[in-house]
Length: 148
Image (tube, rainbow, N blue to C red; front, side):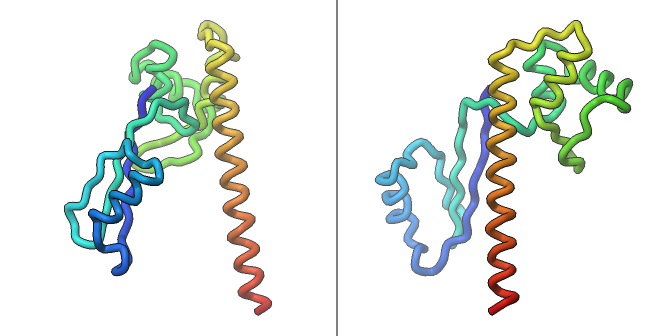
């Protein structure tokens, strides 16, 4: 599965020379991004990656298991009592892929290959660990500020 994502940055005045910045990015190994410098003082890096996602929409899951998005949506609505709860509900709802694949597998009739399940589980665990580390750093910083 391919994923496109863009990282956008506001540059500080000392980094405003985008040509130098682009050369430094390339020298550091970031040579596969499409670079956007259309707005003064800003830079955007667009990447395309082959990856197994953690957070997915219903369309992503439907493609992985070979069904239509409409069918996947019908399943989620018809079984709202047991279908995994999205981790983000906004204009786009997102689920942990591992949770939805496990739900489909447990229902029967949907064969999910073991390597796909394993990669989805690992991707979710890595992201949860990273998020926990970010929260821990944020809490430590806030505690230091409180006692300083």
